[in-house]
Image (tube, rainbow, N blue to C red; front, top):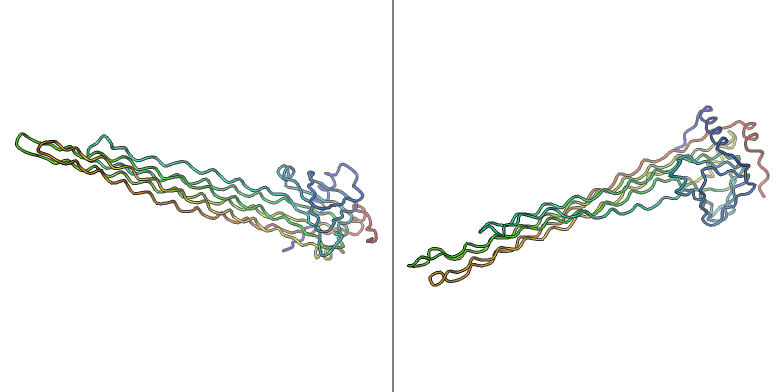
Length: 318
């Protein structure tokens, strides 16, 4: 959707664009292949794109200022079927490190016939990094005789981190020892207590939010706005939300306690070792990050006299 700027807003942007230009414009600025541009203002008589060439504003400048300007009498692509592109360079988000471990269950190895404690659930994963918002680009131009792509999509959000591992189950206590009297066995050896169950894995982190799309503002002579707008193939969509982090692994079950010992001659046979605790369930994934909001496309018209004064009269296309 294209929105019209008021004359006052248009003039404010023109003043801002011109005030940032401290050097005379380059006569011809030719973009061939992928050209990384580290300034926030590009001023040229003619901005010429070779087939499929890309003018990329570098992260170093986009991180310092969100307002970019291109001032040119003419912006043209040499091949209308393989037009040039003006865009910005985003940087892939780093994947967060996995979280640690849940707390281990209570060790009851010294307590007869007491099962081991259950491990705690693993910690939730880190949320992914939010994508950067695309910059604002103002084009102050007199003529765009061929197709031109403008890519100002927001950066995609980063993936969520993996959840932590569930805590290990605690050691089960030993079985009761056998006990005899002078006349016979009063109590046989008991079986060891079960180990504690492992804790569930922590949930994965949520994906990071996508960055918002940028703002493209086209300022040209009133009579040329409609034609130039049709030449611009724009993308100011929001970045996609980051994917969810994976859940953490479940904790291992604790070992069962040893069986109680026999007491000869009347109490024969040792108790059995207690069973190992069950392993914890894996954690579930996190949530997908929200998509960024789409950007905007504004146009602002200048009078023919103002356009000629600021940008000069366009020459015939060679």
